[in-house]
Image (tube, rainbow over all chains, first blue to last red; front, side):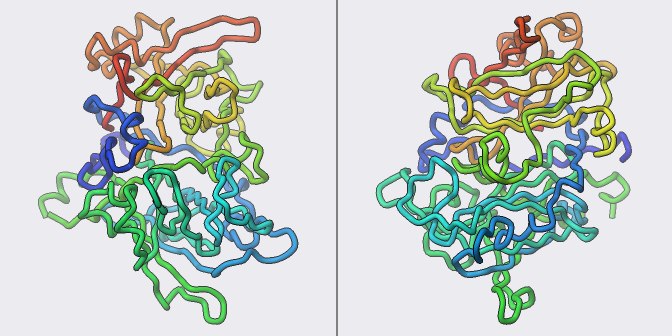
Amino acid sequence: MSDTVTLRPRDWDSHPAYIHPEYKSTVLRGPTKPLLPMKDKLRQLRAPVYGHDAIGALDHDLTRNAARNGAPLGERIVVTGRVVDERGRPVRNTLVEIWQANAAGRYVHKVDQHDAPLDPNFLGAGRTLTDSEGRYKFYTVKPGAYPWGNHPNAWRPNHIHFSLFGEYFASRLVTQMYFPGDPLLALDPIFQGTPERARDRLISQFTLDVTEPDFALGYVFDIVLRGPNETPMETQR
Amino acid sequence: MSRLLGQTPSQTVGPYFAYGLTPRQYFYDHGSAYTPVLAQPQAAGEHITVTGRVFDGKGQPVNDAMIEIAQLDAQGREVTSAEQAKERGFTGFGRCGTGTDAQLRFAFTTVKPGAAAGEAPHIDVIVFMRGMLSHAFTRLYFDDEAAANAQDAVLQSVPADRRATLVARRDVQPGGVVYHFDIHMQGERETVFFDL
């Protein structure tokens, strides 16, 4: 990578603001002072290295990676998509980590006290690397909705958490994938904290093309990370 | 001008990231891509611990933050491949949650980074937590590098009265060298966060 590469800025018309009072925890946790500009140099810092041998054969398959005596309960799904930069170029060989609630809406996490059953055959965490076209693919079960304490009768829509690096330190992204047609989206302060024009990008698309016959419904979730600026030559076109 | 695709928006890491992102640290039965240990004992350089807490706007320590750090090795070199990381005993990147320590500290086992040309030694830091819809970037400098710090363009671009929020305090303990670096999300001592 040449020394002259600079990344496009973080697009604050796409990302949520730090303080979004409807999501109550933001009020005491988001920075209040303006961010200071950082010189371009740091944007070039590469994403961390990751050893391929650390990915297990079943790490992309949440229906099998924690199975003890059977398959996890719930609706089996395929979640796949491409990781690209803002110019649509594939982000190859990049780590994608996911975690989610089980089909009953319960997280394995020890602090989750929601009165819904744990599934002995489901952990809810997986990871994979994108291929040469930026493509990733997970098998899992559709996560359930669950209540949370933000406001009376608050429920999180079904979602899967995603963590990505991309090619650069500054292209780091942690996000959540939602499901189409979920009535809870309109009521969720986390989803609604996203600028309106960008919200749809968080909703996966059901598609028959990736649905596997007699096996699992398919959802496509493409992810766009910050990429390099166009070179002067290209901006003239 | 060619049309660009819109960036996928950030969302909060939430309260339940531990078994997905920091499973080993939190004793879940799942491998960890990154851990709080950047440097193995054989790594070259001065071995240090970088530790601190994350405080909210009421001055309460946060028990569900996740901190990631990235740095050069002791000779000021970037780690550019998994093979290099293995050879050097140094990954260049670490991840630690604040929920496993009784005092809610994060703690990284690493080496003091060397400096790239024209910069003071530093560690780049990303802060995630429940209650943050977008992550925040900050940077750690070392208080025993006053001369280099005075020449560092990024640090010097920060208003003088806020620079101290980015400088870790060296503390030589019987067990080794510790740098203390607390992160204040809000308030008088609000840490400087960067738009990068």
